[in-house]
Length: 167
Image (cartoon, rainbow, N blue to C red; front, side):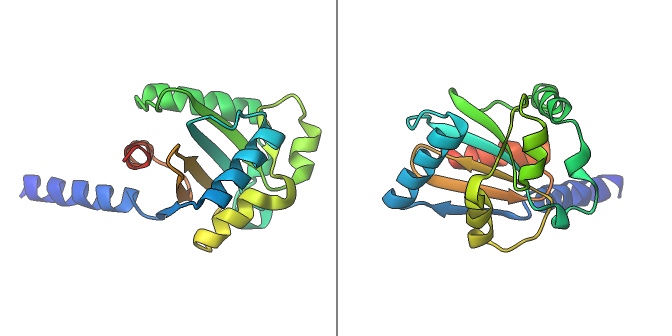
């Protein structure tokens, strides 16, 4: 009986962790526009094979005050999270951090967070599935594949997304 309950729990956890993950194949024009956007606004070379963006959506979507955290601590927290959970990104993955609200990044110029100019990423997120969550994770692959995870991202979610982006 214990094994059955544990098995059900693990199946539920796996099924739940893949929730709110969507993918889209970008056409050539969309790929070019996004690469240009990243190059102009984030300083990412247009030939970067993989880009992962931790995105904080509009403050009105956040049920907790995500906009008051210290962004340097958040970036350090993510690096530790990756290491502790053995999350390995493909070689040359560029990790970015972006906010919808400009007031947040204006006050914190010396951080890894960049404001989503003209809300390009937010519009992209909402065009795939309109889910109003505080956080979203976007991962772009060299083949034009985009994967978006709405809400907080677990270690299993990261591993699943990394696997899928490379297919």
